Length: 66
Length: 147
Image 1 (cartoon, one colour):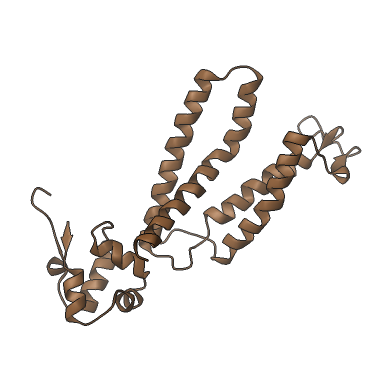
Image 2 (image 1 turned 30 degrees about the vertical axis):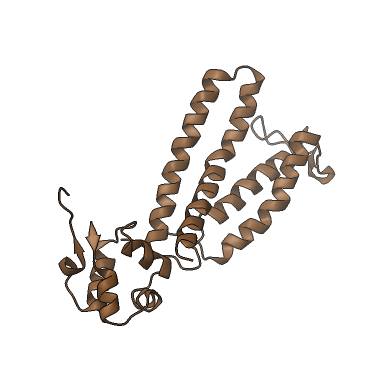
């Protein structure tokens, strides 16, 4: 699974720390999600999409074969 | 995800501090036969199961103390507890159970006689020990990667 968290974070001019505080996780968790090492729960994905003003599908995409 | 019940973060430090004296007591008791002189129960006797007549409770105190303090360390919230940390905790627990039983199976097949009694005694603590080490290591990596 790939994601565009970093891109949308940059569009909103948010640091990892800013986004982390807004959705109630640690900065490290934002980092592991951006590098696709941790896949968030649906609830967290929805919160992130809400903060970044995009849909979850825009934020996360399945890779080919998944 | 439904949050799992965990103790507040402060209990982690309490557990770590309590672990040291209990661990020292356990080591002193099992390797140097040290017994706390005031923990002899000579008069109290409540039947065959709880026969304190000739028993010193130092080893009981040390075992229960070690287990409880390790559980405090294991099942307290982290400073910033989030779902990734919860995932790491559960994954570490699974890892610890598997490693523990692989080692135990090896010991069952390889260790006999009174040596096996020692294996069983250590096995009382190994799941928690392996879990705590694994979980700390995973958290260390999680934090280091982001430093």
